[in-house]
Image (cartoon, rainbow, N blue to C red; front, side, top):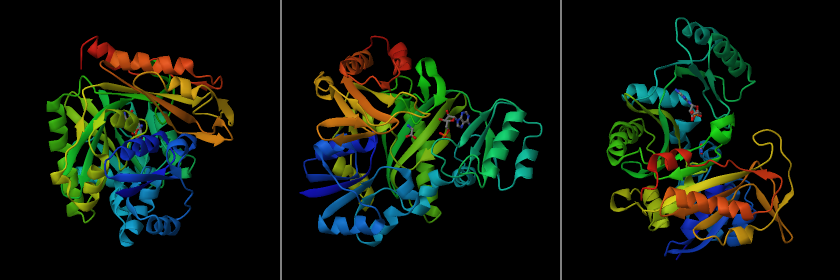
Length: 426
Ligand code: AMP
Ligand code: GLY
């Protein structure tokens, strides 16, 4: 039997802990730092540095570390663990540049003919501004580095594009010592996942996120207000095209560049009329995409993630059930702007009794007997059902039982899927 350590504190990590704990060969699941909800089911520990994580792994005989967020990956946590002889799910720092540097990702696509938006990559203001001459709008200006979801500006005209370039080079927008400027792509957006072991890749499902804060896809951009899967428009044939034109070439390219990719490739895709194109790579699971992936996953997650780490993915299988799944995020009122903290969330137990519902926690903290809200995105109410409509009804039924006046959610998560699938069985 094996002990596992999950790094992170979001709904994504709660969902990973939950599924890992169901693997027949997993004895105990630890999470660092975790959150209020994770702590009710698993052992939370506060490990502050790479050295502390390594010491803990040795002491608790951790058989696999699963790294949730991008920051520790970009900072080389996977390298440090591998050097200490500890199995880790997640790419090393050089491979994490696929997310950590948009310029690196775009250059790789160009060099290996991977379909993506046409672009320019600049390290100074004047060349970046010069590039705008004769371009059509909207155009997309992206900070090269990690910017916590705030580094992408869709400029509607030249004035907005010029301002975005200034804001990035002046540091007003984080991550912008260099910028990518690219063509605006139109189509349906898909979050697509593939597990990789450095040589091989296996498709690991897809989902659609709702990035805007309010109903009808209005309001400011967020980290994601809800997800659903499966996607009626993302056919097996389309998945095959994505694997063949985007994922396999990326895995081969990364190997050739001397930074084999081990972990999960999260491809942000735009399904354009000219076929699927890569918007961005993340080198980790999505949040809240993981909540629906884990709700639908069937099999031994531990064995699968370990196979990525040990280069044995060719022998592994990823399977998903037939049910549809939805995750509705409850956030603190005011998110993604300023919001209140330390408000009490009641009736979580009652809401969790609805058939097919699992509540994943993100920004929560347990204080005495009370569950407090301490973050922007706070809960991911996740439900499965025979149809997406049924899953959606269950999630909102659970939400209506919650007593948290300081929270809000979108009421239309999954609307594209419900419209597209109708009452059809999945
Ligand atoms: P990213 O952080 O790269 O995922 O970008 C955030 C969001 O901006 C994406 O989810 C898309 O909705 C949008 N976006 C990024 N690049 C483009 C593009 N080239 N064309 C249209 N929309 C884009
Ligand atoms: N939900 C989008 C992300 O995890 O980046």
